[in-house]
Amino acid sequence: SNHQSRFAALQGQKPDVIDTPALVLDAEAVNRNMQRMAEFAAKHQIKLRPHAKLHKSADIARLQMQAGAIGVCVQTVGYMDDARAIECAQALAAGGVNDIFISNEIVSPAKLRRVAGLAQLLKNRSGKLAIAVDSDEGIDRLALPMQTPSAAIDVFIEIDVGQGRCGV
Image (cartoon, rainbow, N blue to C red):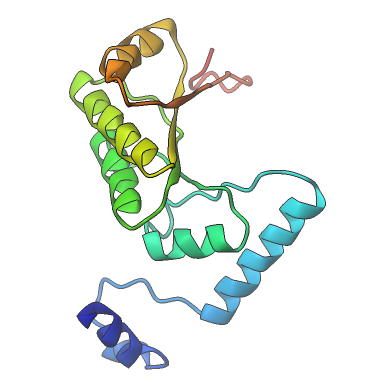
């Protein structure tokens, strides 16, 4: 595609020829780090689910999954609101990532309808979506849009481990 040919033309170039903003990576370091994480997870028999908030890239998420990750995680952070977290999840799904965890609570009915739609899309592709909740109200709010017959979602209960920030 045109995007791939432009990317190929930029590989190995000096930073001053790359229009910003742009994510510029050292491919060898990225591959080495992904391999190390995969080896560590396999050695310790843990499931690896890296956070995509740094790269926000379906291409990198797919590479992480090819290296051994079970999926990726997205979250509302700093300048981002709930809608941005869903958009990040939707963008990753549109890029072919089929196992996504939204690790922050979403309670807005409109945004939860988008979560339900994304859950249905991923289920139709044999993927899955998970979301964190930290209250009975969060469960009740999530249950309404999830009544779509073909939608399914994994729900993780967020536990307050002493920080008093969120969780039950």
